[in-house]
Amino acid sequence: MNMAFSFSNFFGTDELDNQPTQQQTADKTVSSPSSVNGRRPAKVVDMSGRSASTNHIALFEPRIYSDVKGIAQQLLENQAVIINFDKLDDQSSKRIVDFLTGTVFAISGEIKRVGDTIFLCTPNNFEVSGDLSSRFDQDASAFK
Image (tube, rainbow, N blue to C red; front, side, top):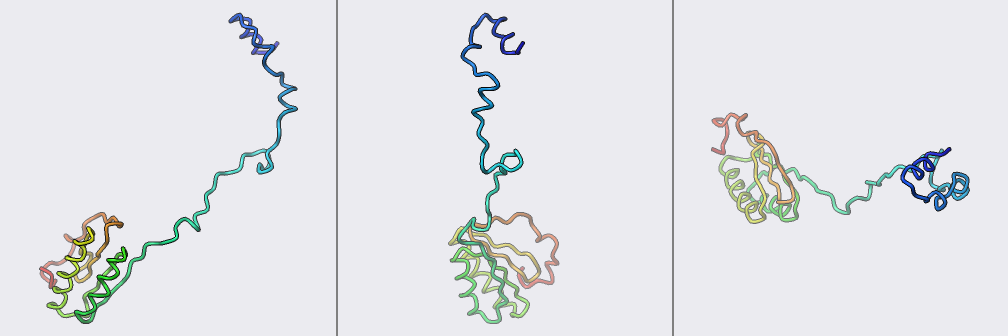
């Protein structure tokens, strides 16, 4: 006796006649052409073409003040920049940081110090977490 028959008798319903038997359902079963070895295909998404544009981080080591124009242009194109001021005098470095602070403010971005003479500037489509400024020797820096 089948389990469906037992339940239908218990509840007093006669729905057993409306339900197909095991043999009828087995005849109607159609195997999917995409299934392999009786398993359902995995839902895999190809990530190689996920985005037409990728975010870039540009690295700069300015040697003169006029290099700031190229740095600002990268920020305006929604690209993050890392600037190393090792090759630049203190006065020009401060001027560039001031200029980039204004640029970052204008695009609702962020500027972070990540080294004694290294800064990270990001547009608003980047998220920067963490704070490294407490690890630097503030006395050795030109950016007080």
